Amino acid sequence: MTIKVKLRQRKISNGRKSLYLDFYPAIPHPKTGKDTRREFLKMYLIEKPRTPIEKSHNSDTLRIAESIRQKRENLLNKPEIYSQYEKEQLRIKELGEQCFVAYFRKLADKRQNSNHDNWVSALNYLEAYTGGTKKFSDLNERFFNDFKEYLLDAKSKRSKKVRISKNTAVSYFNKIKAALKQAFHDGILQTDLNSKIQPIKAAETRREFLTLEELNRLVKTPCNDDLLKRAALFSALTGLRFSDIQKMIWGELEYIEGQGYFLNFDQKKTKGVEVLPISEQAYNLTEGTTNPKDMPQDEKVFDGLKYSAYQNKHLFQWIGAAGITKDITFHCFRHTYATLQLSNGTDIYTVSKMLGHKDLKTTQIYAKIVDQAKRDAANKIKLDL
Picture 1 (spheres, rainbow, N blue to C red):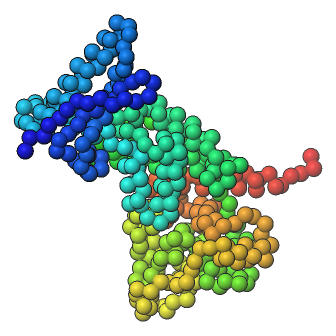
Picture 2: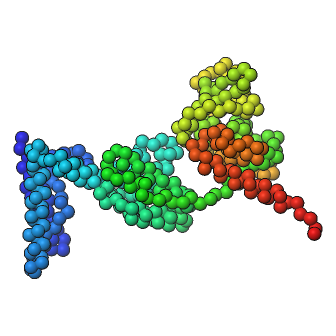
């Protein structure tokens, strides 16, 4: 069946006419897949040309538009008349017409749990900046550098009175870079735009941790939520995140005679497969039998452990009852594990592996904390000289 393509004009504002292609019968839209009769060329004529320049503009525009119409009709009805180069150029042009914001939204939908929420938050700022649409063909380094500046000055969606933190902007912009990397991998982008764009440099943050003396005070201090207390101390002895402790099942724990206890699990955040040796003290906090294989293998080790404002209240009360004034969250128990390991001479490579870090640079943050702690300790002894 032959598809007819007509070049038509439509009056718009400011004395202009918009040019578009009219297909009969309708063809699938390159973005939505739904049948459409129109394709606007984003080319315009001056409705009442007066000067030679205006008349020349109309003549040149019509000639280019007619050439596009002819090529479009040829492609739809006789694709074999195009050379491979012409076909590739048309394919690239159609890819460039796709919407980057819509593509980013699809990537966000594929994420799960907290990572999904982070991608959705980044999407909200991208939509606000672009108005909800941005063609791939319009993407360049300048656009993303401008967007970077926008993020660094953006107001929080929760409170319009405060800006998002620099490290939050870092996280959101990294999602944008990840999407560009994936688009290049998928063949939508013809150049690796991600590699040309510098990330936002993260601000150094203070990672709060507990000393061994403070940790022992917590051991001796009662907590209104015993499950939360055991999970927190388990994190301090293993370095595990809350999410990994919450989902841990008995089938992931193993006891080997002469070697001790091990945890075989998939990290929820990094998706890395880990084999983590854990101490007998840590295992005892699970309140399981001597051999974890005797426990129901599909049941959660810390069954009922939840993250909420209510549970956080118990955590803060427990910390306060122990006489600790630091701003401690559950994640600080992981920081505590890393800091105490390094303070007690464990090499940074081993600590990095125990924490499941993919990059040693992430672990080096804790080494800085230890160095500062040593400096603070050295300055505590002062003589009256």
